Amino acid sequence: MRIVLVGPPGAGKGTQAAYLAKNLEIPHISTGDLFRANISQGTPLGREAKSYMDAGNLVPDSVTIAMAEDRMEQPDAAGGFLLDGFPRNLGQAKALDEYLKDKNLTLDAVLDLEVPEDEVVKRIAGRRICRNDSSHVFHAEYNKPEAEGVCDVCGGELYQRDDDREETVRKRLEVYHTETEPIIDYYKDQDLVVTIPAMGKVDEVTRRSMAALPSRDA
Image 1 (spheres, rainbow, N blue to C red):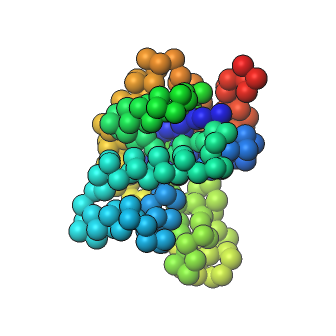
Image 2: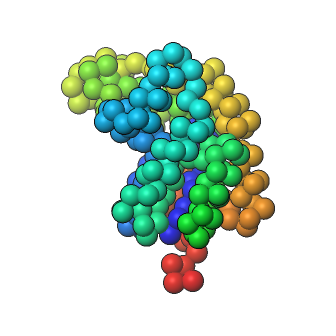
Image 3: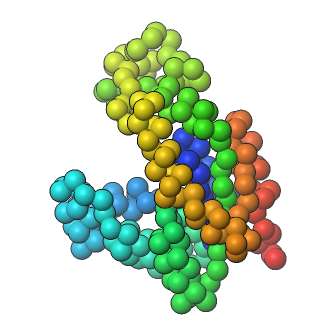
């Protein structure tokens, strides 16, 4: 099963990707993980990406595409994969198509996690992170700490990251609408897109996504 997962920031792509990949027994290939792994391991692609990032520049599509293709070549991806964060624009989508065509492979589905924009802003802007440990995450509405501004786990100060401020979130949404949304229409032309309502509990969204996938026996 070869799947692309798309959706705006705050739609829960990372969470859903992890659950879906586990249920389908395929690797979850995240752009963020690819960058971190290549940079930490000092691969040629990682060094190239880091040079752009250190200079404050965007990493070119060519580097991102090469990282993704290298990861899809790994033995654990032979039976399929779930792509999260790639492709993020039309150029990357077309490159993925060319890669798969060269391998005589095709995508099985593109899952589009749909969340109202106001909900996206609420989800991200309400997030509060512990200064002592960034894995301790709370939410001003959905997962309140017992004492406001204090981490339940270690007593550290909770704060709002600059990236999570409402004005920044809305700018990220603008980038999503401009760069990533066009790939949805691109894949609709290939009859691959399944829209998944991503409101509700995590397991409910996972069940909707699993039910929407084509049968693996088809």
